[in-house]
Amino acid sequence: MSGASQAELILTTTAAANGGSCVARHDGRVVFVRYALPGETVRVRVVGDRGSYSNAEVIEVLEPAAERIASLCPIAGVDGAGCCDLAFAEPAAARRIKGAVVANQLARLGNYVWRDECDAIADPVGDGSPTGWRTRVRLDTSADGRAGFHRYHSAELVHRLDCAQLSEGMLDGVAGTRWPPDCAVHVAVDDEGERHIVLAGARGGRRTEVAEGGYEAVQHVGGRTWRVPVTAFWQAHRDAPALYSRLVTQWARLEPGMTAWDLYGGAGLFAAALALQVGDTGRVLTVDTSRGASRSARAALGDLDWVSVLTDSVRRALAGQRRRADVAVLDPPRTGAGREVVDLLAAAEVPRIVHIGCEAASFARDIGLYRKHGYAVEELRVFDSFPLTHHVECVAVLTR
Image (cartoon, rainbow, N blue to C red; front, side, top):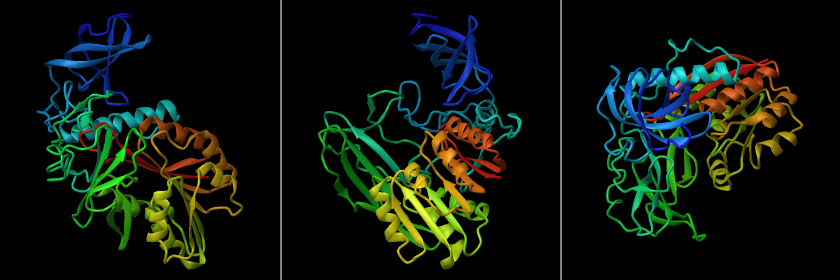
């Protein structure tokens, strides 16, 4: 299909692929089709030729799958925003698709059989509602100062803001406001119901500016309070922080006096849970490169003298440790921890690791790296933490 970009084809899809597409074939070559479900016959427009494969998007569904529903997001789709790329899938079916994708990636990239793809499923988070779960969002502004969501893999903005992920009223008044051009508009609704809007310069080096509320959002988990910059990382799903904190507590299996590392620790959510387990005779080190996140961690955990907060890269922090950890918890960015960090953890002889990943392929590669060092997967769960999208959160316990 060289030179066939924008050509139209009729294809029948097979399995879901990582990244939000389904696999189809034309003239013996793979076509990754967005906005399709497995087992559908669709008319597509080819939008990219990558040599060994092509990318296409659905322009008409000729034979829909039984799981296809009317889109739950009014602004998503081929000609809309890139926000909700699975909004047209029945929610339970979407969780099955996500589970199957993770199982496939683990088998291919991690050399690990989690479950048969037909039996794999992502667990719901909270009440499992596919809409209204998001409490943090970033918008960008156009040259005329209008806020919008990006189209899929595009600099072009969609200025309708009624994405179905968002909490009710979260963006009230934002569409009608003229913001500084070419900047980021960060919006958060915190656990006290307060809305905060902070502007950050995408170009020109402008400093952050509070447009509404405060610079920090108040978050409560496990009886402890965090004040997290609106521009910093915090889980977007309202129920995810408490869920992950409980799971880390359950899977860490720490005892008083032990040592734990919280790597890529952000504001210290997991460090707080680990600190309660090891007690004041133990030690917890939490590491993150973000100064803002580290400030939040120091403020939230200041009464826990046995918790140390380090602002540094995980690689440098691990290289400098002289005391072995009994447990390490990792929540790396989408690119994963990678070979160097896994090598350092193995060299440090950490016997128990709780690894969290928000991208299926990166998570699977990391699992494969651990297994090459003799670690075994003791537990593994997949969560539908980003309903209406193809994204998932994966959590595994690895021991040796």
